Amino acid sequence: MTLPEPGSWGPYLAILGMALATYLCRISGVVLMSFIPLTPRVRRGLAALPGSIVVATVLPLIERLGLAAGLALLAAIASMVIRRSELLALLVGMVVVALMRAAGF
Image (cartoon, rainbow, N blue to C red; front, side):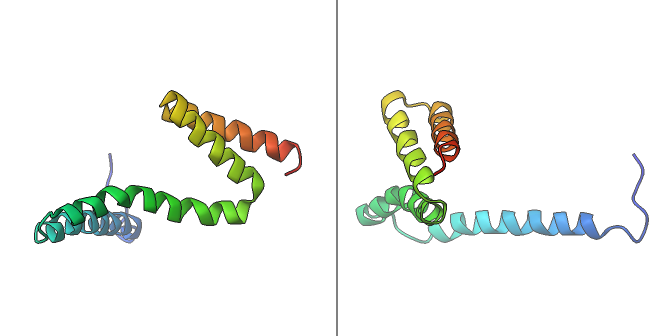
């Protein structure tokens, strides 16, 4: 493996900077949470956090993408509740949205 030319370190420095920023963002949560006592109320809030993040991410997409995305999400949720398989839920959601798009929705 050869070293890059002297003037072409920019992409490598950008990747290194992004990796450092990602690491600092992730570790800062651990450090900050070490100062917060885990009361029952905080535990309930932390338990509800993943669901609220998913809702905050998915609802704007459904609003923008329309009926097909909404039905695909409902089908994926139903599949997940029945079979408890993330891969199957993903496949069901993709099939439903593909069929809805093919039907013109």
